[in-house]
Amino acid sequence: MGIETSCDETSAAIVANGRRIISNVVASQIDLHQRYGGVVPELASRQHVKNILPVIDEAIALSGLTIDEIDAIAVTAGPGLIGALLVGVSAAKALAFTIDRPLIAVNHLAGHIAANYLGDNKLKPPFLSLIVSGAHANIIYVRDYSDYLMIAKTKDDAAGEVFDKLARAVGLGYPGGPMIEQTAKGGNRNAFPLPHPKIKNSLDFSFSGVKTAAFNVLNKAELTAKKNGQDRRKILSDQDFAATVQETIVEILADHLWQAQKLTNAQTIVLAGGVSANLRLRETITKLADQIGVKLIVPDIKLCTDNAAMIAAAGYFQWQEGICSDLSLNATALWELSEI
Ligand code: KG4
Ligand code: ZN
Image (cartoon, rainbow, N blue to C red):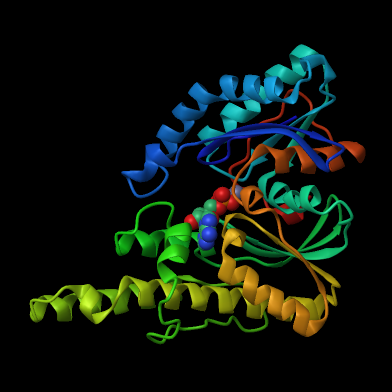
């Protein structure tokens, strides 16, 4: 069984052999946080407390199994919102204690990567992985199921975070990534110039300059429109804004991934995280993989964003390697994957 409560989804799932989903229940809190334009941590924790037991019950009921047939309990122990993580960790500890089964602490990013083991039964390390979510932008070389080498991380904002903040600025709502993708359809991908920041001798990302430049373009268009008594959208449409922002982020991700492939000579590339649901990103990386002649694996769209099936999958492979925790397990807000 997997349990996930690191941010704004309460989820429990049952997975067989790390490869096959038996049940996967996800209670999303999008409606709760929408009016604030982003996740409010305290509200998220309280909602997890309300949801966790019904979600676990439903995952068991839908599986057709009894609780005794569960072999091990995997839970996201970090990184994430500490109050939110604690709800899942406490529930997992109580359950592991009650049914006397191993407890496995899973890193949330390891979970995102493992979503791919559920879609492709033959996928095995080593491979190169681009993990892009609301809180992360990482390139990780997965040497083995529980052996991760950090190739790149973000110095500031995450890719999804830029989408979320810019979508909010144009009034597209939360979460911003899917809204940006939808609005970008038919828009001009080169409506205005945006920087492609590079850090010397490093493949690390930096997105804050892109975000600030996009904010400046938007503010300038709003000022000009105000002066002329016009609607800003007459000067800069939401479509063009979204399409240009999306294209820039996708180009930066693809460029760094290409360089990381050259560095590692990895023959398989894997996408992971909420932003990997983005079709323009998938299309661009598919072309790139064809060009360099490597295999590309992408997760099922439903498994890109947070869910417990991916945590159960990651937990299974950890369990096989004997990497379990005891009941003193605590949640960790910051936990680099490369520490595993
Ligand atoms: O992995 P995830 O569910 O949560 C974190 O671990 O952060 O990722 C959520 C992020 C949000 O920033 C959301 O805007 C972004 O993924 N996202 C997308 C799309 N779907 C979700 N970004 C771009 N295009 C999408 N279709
Ligand atoms: Zn996530």
